[in-house]
Amino acid sequence: MAFQDNIKQTSVQLDQIKTYTPAVKVGDVILPAGIGGDFIPGSSQGSSTAFYKCTSVDTSNATWVGRKALLNDGVYSFESDSTTGLAYTAVTPIVGEVYSSDALITASDLYGQPRGSGSIYGVIYDPSSSSPICQRVIKDGDALKQVAAFPYMPAHNFRRCVMDDLANRHINYYLSPFDSNYKEDGTSSVLTGADGDVMVEIPICHWSVTEMQDGKILYLISDQPFTGSEPHPFFYVSPGGATLRKQYVGAYEACLCTSNGEAIALTQDASSPASYSSGYKARSLKGTKPWTNASRATARVAINANGGYQVNALFHQYLMLMCMIEGGSLNTQATISPGYTYANWDYTYTRFSGRCNYGNGTGNLMYDPSQDSNISWQSVNELLKIVQFQYRGIENPWGHVWSFVDGIVKEDGGYYMTTDCTAYTDEGYASTYTWKDHSWQTDNNYVRTFDYKTFFAKSSGGSETTYLTDYFWYASGSRVVLCGGRLNHGAYGGAGCVTELAVLSIVHDTYGFRVSA
Image (cartoon, rainbow, N blue to C red):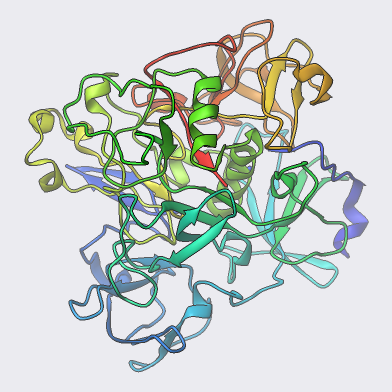
């Protein structure tokens, strides 16, 4: 039966939206965290894991030459090489192909026009079941085919770069997919600000959300348009709010810089965030503590001073979509990473940015206690030694500190929202933003039902292992939206974790920011 025969209705609206990665060993505990099984950076785990030594880099056509083969767990790995600066990493495999010892690893395997461009893939979610696990499918002509893993994921082709002009979105250079300390050509990069801000390029994604005859929800995405699809509304975030374009978000949580753009010096043991002064800038740089304890309005000014904008609420909705599809589950903490969420809250425990520098193509929770050897709190329990993780180049997309999002104000019965990044405001938004109806969950609890496009909570009754699996906090009236949870939230956190407790002027040391361009 052709898949469209099972469609009840198709409704892709630009005004609505919101979405395995391996395990890492912490002591004797295996935490799920990256892509393709129990993969631990820098080590081999039996016959299912192998490493491939990249022997040279052809900078003229960005082709990596080395050894590779299809792993049992479906992940390629590349061993570091002192002459090229390439480091351990993992990328999505081309399923079904077997490689010789001298096979080429080309840039198109990872970036540019990705292999499998135009592939349509996604998941089917069953709202009648408490299980967060989804069925992975690909579209082949008019048919849907169930798959255990995706042979291609072109829409997940995120790419790190250094931008030296956020206002004009000018890219100074792209970073190596293996190690962000190097450019794509193998020469050293500068991630501390002199060359620009460290950003992640997110390619335009086309999607559809369909309620099927049996009540299940079909999500499909591709890097190219397909029948019944629309560009995800995240890609309309722009001056004026109507331009379809790639999006750029900070690879790191925003730090506070002087008016000259230099990061304010902080030790890893700093007990409080840096204080804002007029003219200061907010940037995405390596080796800095997250900037918190400022209002959304203040952050907006500091980010604008550097030519950028605070991330739009649609970013986290898109993040949830992509994590759900890649992980095959709504439980992003189980399939992508628990995140840095299992510690007592203390600003001292927040980490320097850029310490999770394990490539930039996939998500991993990097565990290496030796990295903390010179930090006074290194002696705390094992879980506190976890270094923040990254998802496809985006460090700490949840956990660590709460993330403000802009372009949205929650109200009773719905919310005001805009994709016009030049119009962000906390005053007079009712006349410039667009109103969206939404029946909010009205208690603080795990989410059971949610809007299928925005992932915004509608009712409680879930748990850390059922339905959406993430927590929602509610308060009546006009509120800001914050996403992801913080480092002491444990199972509450995740890509779908949201709080709407805070008033528009809230200032808190657990609330941080992320820049976009």
